[in-house]
Length: 86
Image 1 (tube, rainbow, N blue to C red):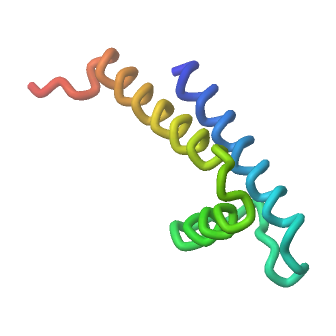
Image 2: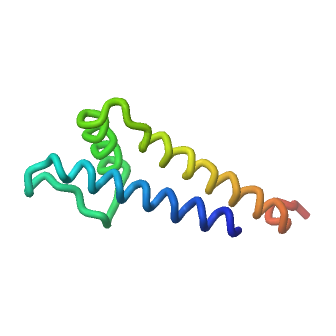
């Protein structure tokens, strides 16, 4: 469970870094907020980030950390017997 928390926090900080970097290049009315995320807002952030930073690996870092977080959560749930039938 510690790995779930650590990966989640690191992914969140990387996402905040991405928002800050993108917001530096956008006009005030188009800037991203740090709260209230949806799939369409995240997709728009990723598109905008790739436009400004085409060779940066921050999106990859967020995806890897998020994947590790969910994988760790599944391992923890399996370890405590969450998936036991019967």
